[in-house]
Structures are given as C-alpha cells and as structure tokens.
Length: 274
Image 1 (spheres, helix red, strand yellow):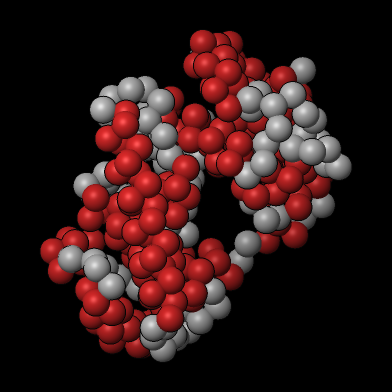
Image 2 (spheres, rainbow, N blue to C red):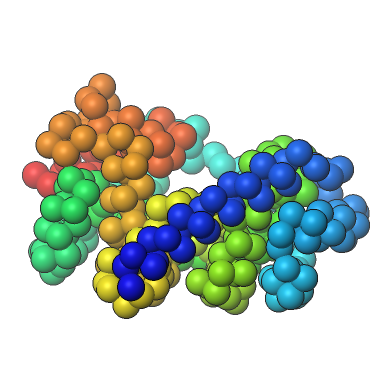
C-alpha cells in the first residue's frame, strides 16, 4: 500500500508542477475588483481544461464560487507582521501557546517522539507552529479555499503565485483527496491544522496515522508529521539549533516569510522544549 501511495504522490506532485508551469505561461488578464472576476473564471476554466484539469473537477470545485471580498481585505491588511517582536508575541498570545503547548506535548508524547525519530524535528517547533496557526486545530477558518484562491489568482497583486496554488487545489480535488467542501481555511487558501497551502499539501503531506490517506484537517498525526516533513525537506538538520542565526532557523524561514513570525516561532518553541 505504501509503495503504491508513494508512486501516486510522486505522480500527483509532478502533475501539479507541470500544470502550474503551463498555467503561468498562459496567464489571463487580472483585475483589482469584482467586475471582471466571472469572465476571468470562464477563461481560466478553459485554460485549465487544456492543461489537464477535467471538466467535472472544475464544475465541482467552482460550484458556488464567489469573489472573496474578505480575502482581499485580509491580503491588503496584514498589519501584525509589521509589529515589533514583543508586540507580535503579545498579539498572537505567545504565553498561552507556550502553556497550552506544554500540555499538548505531555498528552501526545508518543506522537511527538515518533515524529522526532522520523524527521529530526523537536516537538516544540511543531507545537509552536500548530498553536500559532490554528490554536492547536481549534480555529482552522471557515472560508472557501476555492473562492479565496480563485480571487487571489485573479487579483493583480500576486496572481502568478496564487494561480499555481489554484492549480494545486484543483489537482487535490481531481485526485479525490479532499472535496471542495472540506477545503476551508483562514482566507488565503490554507488548509488543515497547520495551514498548508495546496502546493505544499501536495508535496509534503504524509499519512502518519496509517489509514491510507493524507488528511491534514481531521488527523492530528498527519498534520503534525506533515509539518515536520516540510521542515526536514527545507533543510532541517536533526540536533542543530533553531534560533535566529543557527542552522535550522532557515527551515523556519521557509515556513513563513515574515521575520517577526519566524522569530516568534523559534522563541515559543524553545520555551516549550525547555
């Protein structure tokens, strides 16, 4: 089963990357308000079919698709990343993440020990990300990932980046891993307990609980092991330090581009591990 799954995942990842490159080469006209969104969706759908996305997949994924005004507002107003480190830590509830994170570490000791054996990533780092992203899986967001991704792919600010993510999301639906209804998140198309973008879901999600599917939404084991797999795949060195200036801080940088976020994760992780 695992050999078949490994081959499938390799093919899925290759498919997403080829679709993404093809889609970028045929970029449609972008827009900065809802007026051209419907026309863009129609043009993108035709392009996607030409690049291997099935008509049934598009019909299923785009049923009820809307221009996500809230997503645009969130994208334009990410002010927390402009705060000082102390302000960011306070706003994000660092002390609560540490205290609750220590309890999660104790309650899930076997799971975190297994993850560290497999990927070399200590529990504090995984727990810090888990707590920061969704308050340990309690708040994963309720916005349609498809509407968010289509809106951001159409929007002129980062259209190529999110067009790749939209292709990845469609490939996830086409593969049967998730339904569009399950794909709900915080506003930029992120999925699951640690908020994977669809392309990262395709490339780094793992089946840690052994049920034959990768479910970062309902399976704590899958979500946390996948986070460790992402970090290991981005250069995590088992046993090396992860504070700013140490070898593994670069893997944390790959998780989120905001310096203040990276610093907070490292500090919170150290407090949990300590």
